[in-house]
Amino acid sequence: MIRILALLASMVLLAACEETQLNEAKEDLGDFNMRVSFVYTDKALQWPLSRAAETSEWNEPIERALEARLGRYNGSGKYDVAITLEGFLLATGGIPVLMNPKSAAVVNVFVYDVNTKTYLLKEHQMKIFEDTTGESAIIGSGYSRTKAEQIDGLALKIVDGLEEYMAEQRVEKGWFGGAQPADDSASAAAPSTQPEPRPVAEDVAE
Image (cartoon, rainbow, N blue to C red; front, top):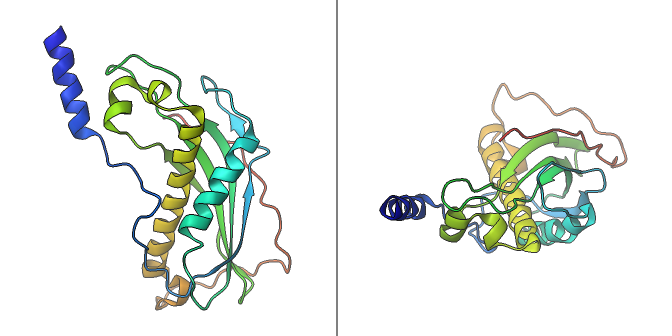
C-alpha cells in the first residue's frame, strides 16, 4: 500500500500544472488601455462545502489582479472592465492523494469601449479553477493554502483568463484595433451610462 501511494504521489507531482504568476508576459491587446475597473462581489453565493468567507474579502484581491495585469497596458483606446463574482467554493481538506477538492469561482465579465459607447463583452461567464501545484495535488488546497491564499490565487486566475480571452478575441474579432473580419457584426450600442452588472447565480458541478 505504501508503494502504491508513493507511486500515485509521484504521478500527481508530474501532472501538476505550473502556477499562474502575477508578472507573466503581456498579451497582444493592441490599443487597450483600462480607463477604470469595477468589481462587484456583494451578491456572490458561497457554495456548499466551501470554507466560510465574506464576499467583501474578494474585492481587493480582484482589484489588485486587475491593476497588475490589465493596468499595465497603455494603448491609445479607452476601455472599462467589470467583473462580478457570482459564486465560489474555497476547498477544505480532503483525503491526501485520493480526493483533493479544488477551489473554484464563477464570474461574469464585461468590457466596454468608451470611444464607441459599445460593449465588446457583456455578461460573459467564466468558470475558474485554482492552479494545482505539487503540494496541493498531494494534500489538497484546503491543507496547503490559507483562505486568503486561495482567494488571491483565484483572483489572479480570473484576470489571467480574461486577459487571455481578450487577446483571443483581438485575433478572432478584431478587438482593440485589430483587423475586423468581413462578416463580424457590430456590437450592440450600450447605454450612455455604465450600469451595474447584475449577478446571475449559477452552480458549478465540477
